[in-house]
Length: 622
Image 1 (spheres, rainbow, N blue to C red):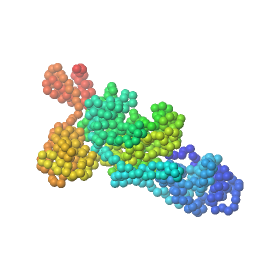
Image 2: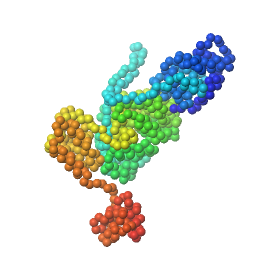
Image 3: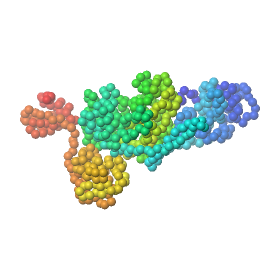
Image 4: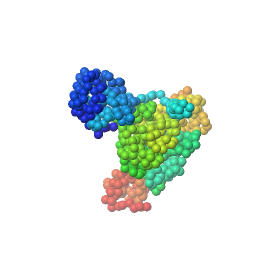
């Protein structure tokens, strides 16, 4: 965030000359000067002599650590400006600028000797170092500490939620801290299954969307959710209070997938239902990881959908406020760069991630005119100052982007609590906002980590190697292809692996199934996952029949190769079919199938038709 409206003075003398006598006297009182001065020129000259050499260093030494950090940050910035928002995000507080009286009168601290503003009538501290002072400070001020993103290899299990309770007897507020369990979802394998599930539902004609908003209908959302691995994030949430029933969380993944397949060209609207495009048809038999990588890159660039629209509580987005909204691809590119700087497979608190983005100047703007957006009612809940402080618009947008799209596409594993208990944004200054159950349904997102699929999609690695499932359960693999769970119940990740290759016959018994396995292999899954899973979970070597089952699957899955789609052309005469299949102009683009049929690969169809016309024929519609 830059303060481009502020001028950087060339010299301290020039900067001091812009301030009035009253302010200069206050600055002089901060210096070890015994005599009193009243003339402006004398005040400017005296103060300026203390802001160089050893005297300047002595003043620097009187600053407290936070004030010294403020000077250091400005000293090693290009323009010598102090930037309040990144500073607070990095250090957790603001430096002491002085004493304020009656809300406007300002008595400067020693920082007033370093920072100046071009407004000569202002009683507020400046934010810019004069040019000569900027260079002088670089001679002895140490560089500010580098900021590192806080991460943890251990999965966080509890989230500390603070509640403010009012004690009517003591007439004081008390802060109560509750520790809530965090729900975790490892999305890497889930996204593979969900992608294929939504493509198959579309292929069956079961996904209807609006021809105006392109959002799925309520009936479609109900159809999709049961087919998603583990359902939607909050499917099993049970409201505990009446007000929660009146403010439902709503769908997340089940709504995101229809938007994703449209924005990324895997499906398009035909009438009121989605149908698969050629790219979508191809994706049914392609490695899901590659499709997800392509879908992620296309989502980053789409202008068809704006994640902000999913923040229902922020009104005015389709009215006057629409004109001030910034480009979604520009916002996403900033978040993308921040995600690319995250270590892989390490958990990150969302609040820490947001502060890190601000502190490292990886910021974006959601609206140029946030005053045209509002809560509840225009004119009362206007978000007049929400465009710069990151407490509402940017924070809500960031959480939505991470949970509804990055996690749904499988790039990040997530940990969340109920949005009713999530981080409370700074909304108390906005009329009616204190009555909101939550600012957005994504407020419950508390942590995430970039997984192996995320590293692949973010360009951190060039080859995707699925994360091995840590098998916590004990298995008995029998010669008859039964897999018996003898230890603790399967985790969701373990269940996902078995579902690809086996049918569940009871709570603890699964049976390896060739048809099920071949279907998964055709969708791009590999046999290595199955073999590693069984070997890790079994205390004994795998039976020969199971080894043979896996080897047979390997052979059968590689016996036939999909060479792409083609068009079948019927000739009314076998002689004509033979002629076309052997003519030098057309034989490169077709194959003879039987006596009277020609097979034309889709990617050569245009060239085949052109060559056919030169031969003196054309294709009629059936």
